Each structure stands twice: as structure tokens, then as C-alpha cells.
Length: 162
Image (cartoon, rainbow, N blue to C red; front, side, top):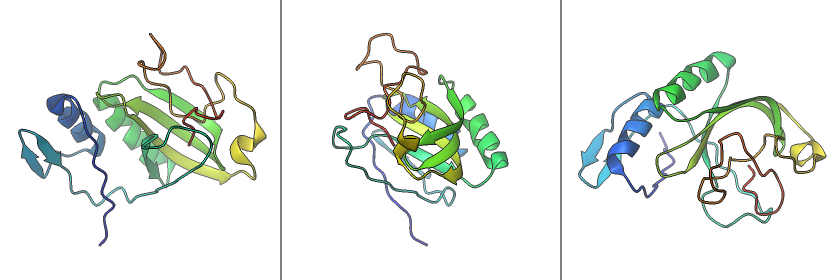
């Protein structure tokens, strides 16, 4: 079996271990004072790239599920992280329509849990950027002071969209 490897630098290992243990539904398989690793069989990976004017690097991470039941179960895991959750139903994001939930880990990295419902023929259905058009990772507090998770800057160049 192949595994996709993602390594994320964090600023608080203890908080991050708690967050990711809740998100993945298990404790790390390897843990050291400066390192932790989870070897999990579920979820499989969906890796996407885009060239839409966003800053180069990791934009957001996510877990794609195959059913509403799996999304409900994953939503429960997100709630266990004690993070603010932004939920969106039937949203156009990139070239898909999805139900999704967003959180940020303790270091501010955006995570989405989503169930793809359908494809759409144009990026975000051709909709222009709007404060609530629900297709981008919510901006971190460092980029917009006192931001709420629901505040979005969506699908304009540099916005960090899917």
C-alpha cells in the first residue's frame, strides 16, 4: 500500500498532537519530544495543485469522504478538536460542488473535511469573489486581525482558493 506523506512544521507540539489525534481518531504511532507521526490507512489522499495567483506553498489540507455518513463522522472528529468550525453545504469550490467543514489547527493551517456532490464546468461556477461564496480556506488571523472563521476572501488571485 502506498501512503502520501505530509510533514507540517508546528509551533506547539502538544496542542498539535491533541488536535491531530482528535482529527484522525487515533494517537500517534511514533512520538518524540520534537516529533509525532500517524500511520493511518484511512483517509486515502486527494492532492490538487492550482495556479491562480495564491502564494506558493501549502494552501490547505483536507480529507475527502465518499458519503454523508462519513462526513457526519468526520464532523464529530473536528468538534473533538475544540476548534471553531465553518460548515458549508452545496458550495461550489474549484470544479466541484461539495458539503464541507473547515477548521484551523493550532498553528493556523486550514483543514477541510468534505463530500463531493457533483462536478461543475467552470471554476467556482464562474462566480466572482464574494465574502460568503464558500470556496476558499478561511484566512488566518495573522492576515486579517480578529477574523472569524466564516470570513472569507474567495477565489480572487492570492485568495488561497482550492
